[in-house]
Image: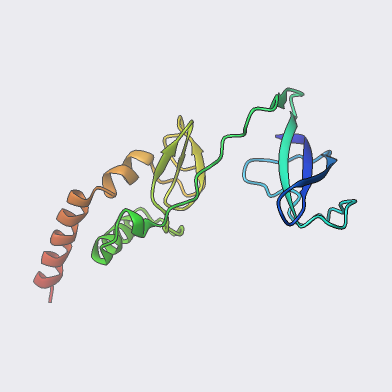
Length: 170
């Protein structure tokens, strides 16, 4: 659980030149995984010329009093979620994937491509998971199941079986 977050906010002018840095400390947060933080907290910066800002998290304190510091290392950027259409442009295959998800009683939004990066993977529901997590922590879909069910050959085979079954039933 996260207790404290310390950030630096670098104010930038309209040409993205630095104007100044504001330091902020958010205390007693008690944040669990996936909790939102600081989204709706207004922040007043001293310079009127600031057009945009760059935020750097430089320290996080956890409930066990362990501390993470960035030591000016760049933070790993999470990739932008790719839509499922980027890996399954064929509508009939996407619909087959949705049918497979409904067989799991999965009611989550399956709009994204599975993606692996650094120590993480993103589920088709959009959640970010650790690589050692076998199932999505949000929707519960197993990672291996997603990989298998996003293979085009497998989807096409299942789709053909679906069409055959649909034609055979009165």
